[in-house]
Length: 544
Image (cartoon, rainbow, N blue to C red):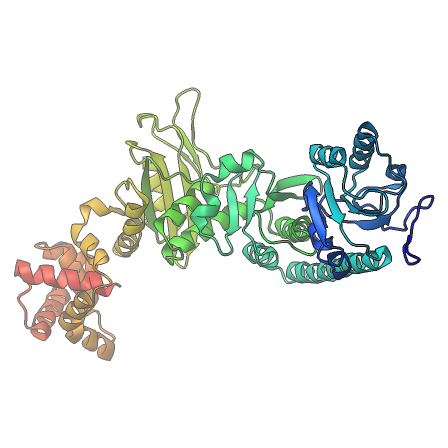
C-alpha cells in the first residue's frame, strides 16, 4: 500500500454532527464527489446504486467491521484488503454498510480484488448502495481533502445564505411588509412557486414565480390535501395558534434548503398575522383577487379561474355575479374564524347564510328563495367603490339580502363563465355611477349603459362623446355651471320634464332656462328621440 495511503481501522474519522434533514442541499452527492480530479484519475466506473445521495464525510478503511464505525452519509474509500471473499459474507457486509446509512463505496481494484466480485455487485444493487470501482491507484488522502473541501465550502455557503435570509425576513418584519411581499421574496429566494394557504387549504397568496398560475393552482385544494412528497411545507403559527401553511413547490437546489427558507418566511408571516388580527388573510385574499380582476393582472382566463377556485371561490358550473356599491354598509362583527365564508342552508330551512370572505358580512336570505346550496362571496374596497363577487349554484336566484348589501349601485346578470364575469365588471362599475342614492340598477334593465361600457375602449365612442358634449363642457368649466347635470336628468326622465326638473334640484322656470341654453349651445332638438339617445350615449361614455 502506498505510503501516502491513510488507512484508519480502529479510529473514527472526525466528522461534523449529524444533520437534521435527510437531504442537505449544502452537501455534495456521490455523483459530485466522483467529479473531483483525484477520483477521476482512477477512472471510476459506476456498477450499482444511486449517485444522488448526499455525502456527509469521507471515511477510509479496509476493515470488514467498518460498518460499526459509521454514522451515516459517509463515502467509503477502500481497497477491500480486509474484506471477505465468500459471497454470503460479502452480502452480509453490504447489508451492514447499507443499514449504517453509507452513501456509497469506492473500491480500488488491484490490492484485494483484481476484478469486482459479482456477489458484491448483486448485493449493492439489491440495497441500492452506490458501488464505484477504480482501475488505477489514487491517493485517498487527496480524495479526502478535495471532497471535504467541497463539503466545507457548501456548509460555509449555507451559513452565509441563512444569515442573508435572516436579515431579509427580519427586515421585512420590522418594516411591516405586506404578506404578498413576503411570499414574493420567498419565491425569489427559492426560484420556485410559493403558496400561502389557510387551514381549509384555500390559497391566501401565491407567487407562481416563472410558471403560469393555472399550472400551479389548478386543483389546489385536492393536491394540497394529498401532501405531495416533493412539496416542502412549514406551518405558519404563533402563540399556540396555527393559521395555515407556507408551501414551496419543487425548484432548483438552495444552499440553505427550502425548509430553512420557508421557516424564516413563516416567522415573518406569523408576526404579520399577529399584528393584523383576525380577518386579515380573508381581506387580503379578496382584495388581491379583485385587484387582479380590475387591473387585468393575469395572462389567461385559465389563470384567473385557477386563482379563484384555489381561493375558495368556485366558478365552474356556477352562476356568477358582480356588484358595485358606491357606499358600503358598515361590516358586521367578525366571526370567530375568518376562514369560514361558506354559505350553508339552515337545518330548519330558514334561509341562506353567506359569510363574506373579506368583511365577514352575514346575509340571511328570504325563506321563499329556493335552496341554493353553498354560496361564496368576495368583497374589496377600491377607492370609493365596493366590489362584490358572488358565486351561486347554477340556476339560483340572486338573494335579495345580497342586493341590500349593495346599498346604492349596480349588479350584473348571472354569468355562466369566467369570461362573462370579466366582461361584466366594467359594465357594472360604469352603471353603478349612474345609480341614484338607495337604488340598485340591474345591467339587464340598462341596455344602453351596457353598450357604452362594452365600447368604452373604442376611440370612436369617445370622439362621439367629446364632439356632442364639448359646448356644454366648455360652458360649465367657464361658469361653474350645471348643464351636464341637467342634461343627465333629461335623458334619465325622457318625456317627463317635471321629474327631470326635480332630479336637477331646480325650479321649473330655471330648469326650462337651462334646457333652452342647452338646445342653443348644441343646436339640437331635445324633443327628438334620436338626438336624445345620442346625447344619452355620449353622457354614458363621458362618465360623471
